[in-house]
Every structure is written in structure tokens, then in C-alpha cells.
Length: 213
Image 1 (cartoon, one colour):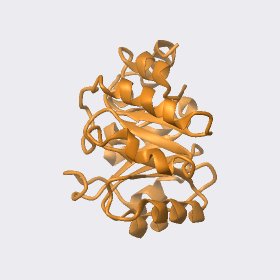
Image 2 (image 1 turned 45 degrees about the vertical axis):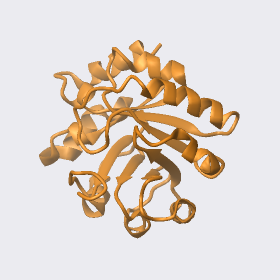
Image 3 (image 1 turned 90 degrees about the vertical axis):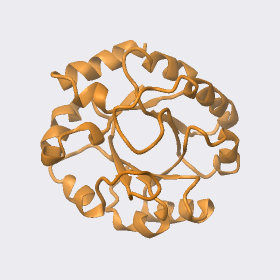
Image 4 (image 1 turned 180 degrees about the vertical axis):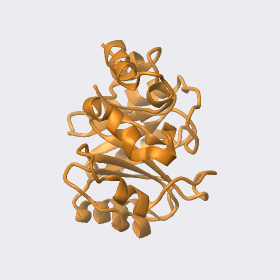
């Protein structure tokens, strides 16, 4: 199990400093990009994300919660190992978006809202590197985990079969539920409040890793 700390729960006035505090145990930095249309919130865009890289070594896990990923994905500076994830519900064609992200040199992720049937991803599973299962409604940090996400992860794991596709889960993950999602098939865990809202961030990450066993 790998952790991707979500900077949505960090201090936006000190993002680089906050990221450095957790970098030693992070596999990725999870960065939520929201446009105020696809979800009812605004966060940060390409200029901030691109500048954030200075002094950081972990790859970025960029989650595009936006209507037009084809327009905005090319505006991010892509480094080796980076993931750019878009939503199946976005306005742009999924196959075109996958090809465009792949052409940038990034790994491709696809995600969906909790109410969107997992089966809609079936035709794309051979073309992506990662599927992000949302265990809260996308848009805001600090929400409670939706237990039905565990069953969705299990169904997705069966659909993926032996394809080399990572299952990531994001939303309300803490020491009480992380083992359930890992046992269901997730191997990349996004955590925001469970890390950045704790007094000792590294200890909080160690606790998540231990609880997942």
C-alpha cells in the first residue's frame, strides 16, 4: 500500500513546506484541481502546481475535477512518474483525453463519482494505468467515508483482472477504514485530513500504513 497525501487539506499559504513535511513517506503528492463547474469548489491550477515542484522529489498525482480536461491537461508540466487523472463524466471524449494525457508523457488515470456505475469504465481499462475510486462526493476535503466504496473497489478489481491497472481510493480514509479498502483491492491511498490535520504528520502516515496491514 502506498500513500498519496492530499494537499487539499494542507495550508495553502505554505504548500511547499507542508509537502516537504510528509515527502519521506509519500509515494505521490495528490493534487486536486477543481474548476467550480464540475464540482462546486475552486482550488489551484497549472501555474501553482507547476511552481510547487521546486524542491520536491515525489511525482505528482494530479486529479482533474474539471469539465474540460483536454484543454487543461497540456498546461501542466509533466515529470517522469506523474499521473494525470480525469473523470469519465467530464465533457471531453474519454478516449481522446486518454490519448492526450499519454502524449504528454504522464501516466493516465480515470475516475468517477460515487453514483456513477463502475461498469462505465470497462471499455477504458485497457488504456489507463490507474482508476481512482471516489469514496466521497468530489469537491471538498474532510468528508466522511462512504462504506459502499468497498464493494465498488471489489467489483472494479474483478473487472480489471490481470491488467496492470492500479486502484486508487480517495475520500475520508483513516485508520478505521484503510484496511477495508486495501483488502478490497486498492493499493494507492489518498489521505488528506488523516495526515495534514494531525499534529505529527509522519506519525499519522505510519499509523495508516500499519492499519492497512
